[in-house]
Image (cartoon, rainbow, N blue to C red; front, side, top):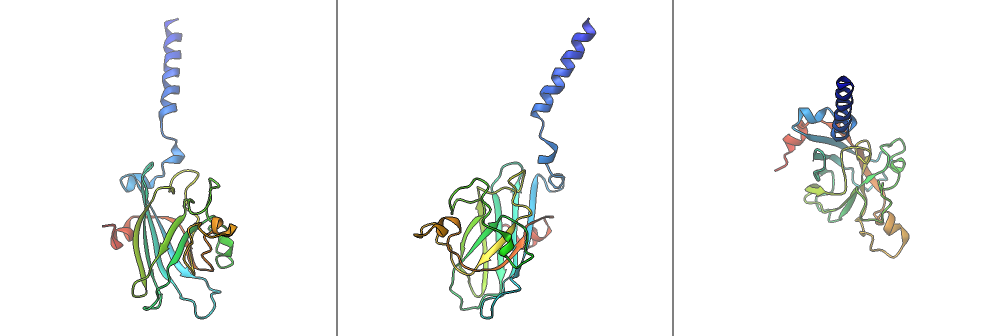
Length: 202
């Protein structure tokens, strides 16, 4: 009889422990390698179908997040703009990591909660160039590199124009910010910390 009680207690303890353990799928193996940080890298290239006269952008958009719920830290590191360029340009995360037909196949803004622009997880904002380059750090609270809503595998897209931040008078303003043609981009992949350390977070 005592043996049955002990067995039941052990079963209950095992069940309670399972309830509070982190799901295996929520904790990628890279976290052990990088002190609970996850890193992502996106190698930017221009749209191969870009018309003459538009800038050919190259560089990286880099991501880092502390597990399980820190802000996503982002570095934008771009080159290829004319040195006298004064046009602000929008950068967004789009739903699909599919660049098979330029950047049209990247789909709309990544918007898992169905909210109006500019409250999407991938609304990174407008970026002003300096001497033909863009170099900026920011924290993104709405995005994550973990779990179902992760931005890993999705596309970063750089647009021709600035984002109107949803303040325009048409419906497209609430969807995309009227930022114009998609001129460059990349797909976000899991990476080591090497490139991010070389470019530097500080």
